[in-house]
Image 1 (cartoon, rainbow, N blue to C red):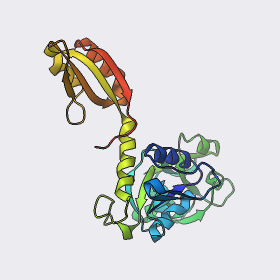
Image 2 (tube, helix red, strand yellow; image 1 turned 60 degrees about the vertical axis):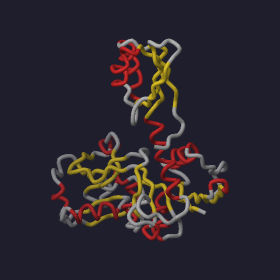
Image 3 (cartoon, rainbow, N blue to C red; image 1 turned 90 degrees about the vertical axis):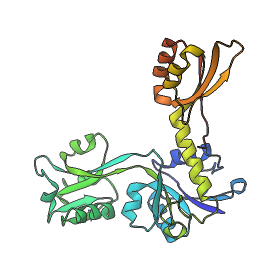
Length: 289
């Protein structure tokens, strides 16, 4: 039975649970439950603190898990990233008092407050900058004002929180993070796509990739005169090629193809201009490519 770690709370929790449900798995209904079995899919879910997931997976206690790339790197766990899941995006930056810092090198010998000492420490080491890290569990933007740090390293969205604290962003981006599927090194040879030994791991990966693809595409059906088929097909090439079927009227054909969701209306407009009619769009709930 595949053992899967899932965030039990926080910004990753709800979307991870929704994604697993769309992939056909049966998770918990009561947020107080910590362990749930899904016998039909031969998996067992363990609902854990997002920060702890990489540690459990890296130790081999659990097979795979969903967590943030930032948490994986900060944990210094031997677990490996298998796939991006395209949610929970965040950006990590340095910030300090207005005008105090212009470059990363100016942090040499200074104090930096952060909730991610492993992540930030590794970045500074790679940049040949030595600084004292002050570990805080949250609200790091107050560290400078309270005198416990000279600068901070934290998640930045719009930067408004930092500006309210009298701080401004400087230096390079530390990390662009997103939710990821991770696996124990002891269970793979680098990725689930290369030598995975855990039953169900590849199935999980394919299902999650299918959900991601289904969210990016819709299914478009339309009728078009044969004389305009080439022009219409160029607008809807599909993944391999469009499906073309004859109609009762020999001068017309029916076409079906997957098209990018965000381009749906633009493609419909273009199809209408080349003579397509009865243009229909349907959502895709699951995909296997």
